[in-house]
Amino acid sequence: MATALGAKGPLVLGVTWTEAALAVVLVALRAKTASFSEGKMPGIFGLRWDFLWIVFAMIVALTAQSLMTVSAAYGLGNHQSALSNSDIVKTNLWSWIAQIVAILCLVVGRIAVISFLLALQERTHRNGRRLLYVVGTLQGLINVVEVVLILKQCEPIQKLWDPSVPGTCNMIKICSQVGYLQGSIGAFADLFLAFYPISIIAPLQQTLKVKIGLCLIMGGGLIAGIAGINKTIAISLITQTSDITYSIYSLNTWVLTEMWFIIIFGSIPVLRPFFIRFGQTIRTTPSGHRSSRQNTNRSKNDIWVPLEDRGNAWATCDTSKLAYSSRDAESEEEILPRSSGVGQIMVTRDVQVTRKDMA
Image 1 (cartoon, rainbow, N blue to C red):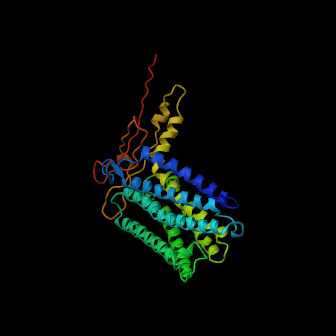
Image 2 (image 1 turned 30 degrees about the horizontal axis):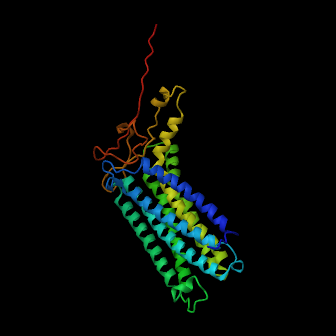
């Protein structure tokens, strides 16, 4: 295979493979600490649904990333004048395939986020659950429609990546317009999923500082939404130029970035208990034991607050009725509920009492 990696190609690969590496690390941590279905946690074969969806998304994302790497090796990001006709065709072919796979990955990644939110709030706020299903279905349908139009915009289909093939591309304008719609709905879905947790966290009886912290952790999808907006803007660049191998590098970068950001920022909230436990571990005394103050002051906010079914209303948290269960042998804190009764939220606290004998 002729190597034409240059111009903007290394930029595309450098940015997106860095994002891919971070996503791999976070998903691996999820596999270790937040993958098993326990108690009333929804799942199948002992694994949580949100974990299964994120693993599926990860496989599809790595496939898209690899295909884009092949496209870059043939000349993605180079001006067409610097490439042979053969390299132009191969660059366009692998670029389009990678885009299609990435678009489908956006659907799966958002489903993983929605699955986590559904499990987190359990059966509370039925209208909110319905809204999550609507957003997930809408973004899935528009992405599938966009993929179909991409494949149908030229007749024969080979003309999509090889301009020398006789035929027509009468649906390019329609495809680009639907692309704007798809990008807009996708960005809206990312922003919606970023702000939705506010409605879960706001009613809880926690300090404002804790609520803001939780909202920031849960709202990382806002960055994915910004990437989606930039992706939508980049669509205009490929509809106004004939130098497609160069102009499309920006669109491809944003498509892959949005894809990876959904996986990255969709995994951080799930791993919050892991990071809390890790932080507590490194704040140990020189002898290897936690100080009594750390044990005594273990924050009541160190775990996710699960919500139980209370009709159509949001559940609230009465910290005087909280109980907690931890396993010292594992690095996992339970992020989702193991309910012992309807209408209660159970939390634990480690308390150590030291008595000093008086002389």
